[in-house]
Length: 241
Image: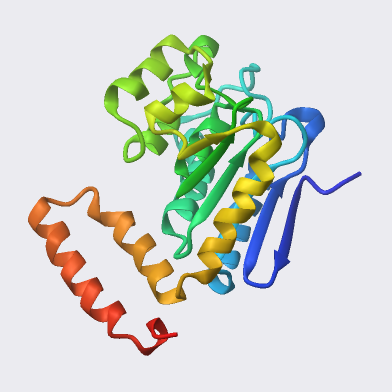
């Protein structure tokens, strides 16, 4: 039986691959916890993290999505949800950029993770959906992944309609960064990684640090943060070739 998650490291680039193509790369809570640990570890010694799914789909969400299970008490429900909030936190808090590569369907948690990546490159064949309401699940966990990624009207449309959208609409919604032909997806990602390899590491880290907070600040706060980072990073000897 193959491992449900694979990790590969080439130089200072780490690739994390959801490896259950026969199940649409759905993962159990235990394996999502492993993904959290992998991201935390990779962020310590990598320049960039690639996040991908094996096979035709990116990720169709959590294992047993939409299937009835035992009724849990509130604290047990909260503990189970912490697995996903911790996963979201790993994406947001990683000090290096995470690039999502979406070749096919990204559904539920998969859609949320595609949004959470710092940059998301999608194939024209990619599809995105938040179907939780059709399964009688109130999807504020998924919505919390979108609050600093997509506009309100885009998020509420995805949630209330439960409709699948294509890659180009996902681009207008802010779920993805760029859409390319399926045959060019790997090359587009490789070109982006090569560009990031040329970027001084201090600048790479500073951009992630700034983006993590600045878009939620007032204009004055964002300006002050920018001044401080600009002065600190651009005076660093590592910025000079």
